[in-house]
Image 1 (cartoon, rainbow, N blue to C red):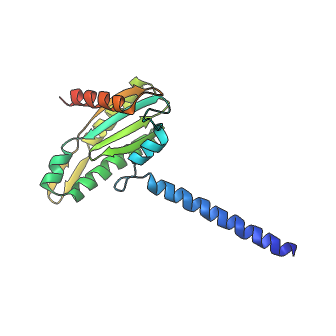
Image 2 (image 1 turned 45 degrees about the vertical axis):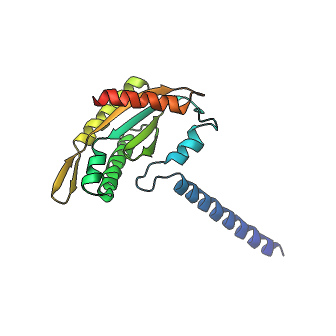
Image 3 (image 1 turned 120 degrees about the vertical axis):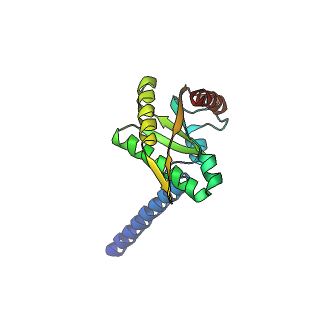
Length: 181
């Protein structure tokens, strides 16, 4: 009888572990962008913002936009644009990992990524973003016989707990526009 109970306990333990693994995988899929390896807007809403769409913590937020994305998609097709976004995001993810920078990258819109960066000050973040910007500009993207030079622009802002996400995003967009001109 005791042996049978031990077998049932082991089966329940295995079932529980499988369930936990399945839930982890489902959560990862739910919060992941379908083109890149980045997080998505749902992750942003659930993990970084309160119900009233204010930040639930404080830190630095970077907005990075891929230049000429719309033109590339119009001239070629969305598959080419998707490959371009994947290469940019893969580069940023690898850079952050190689340089031990704690971060969360969110694909916020078609050509725009938001990066939450932890444990660095604004000057250090600016320096790292310039390195990423230079690295991306040295990266060549090829489609058929055409070679593209990738460029991007970025802006950095500090945000505080209970600050409205929309006001930070508006200020980031303004800085991004100024950095582009």
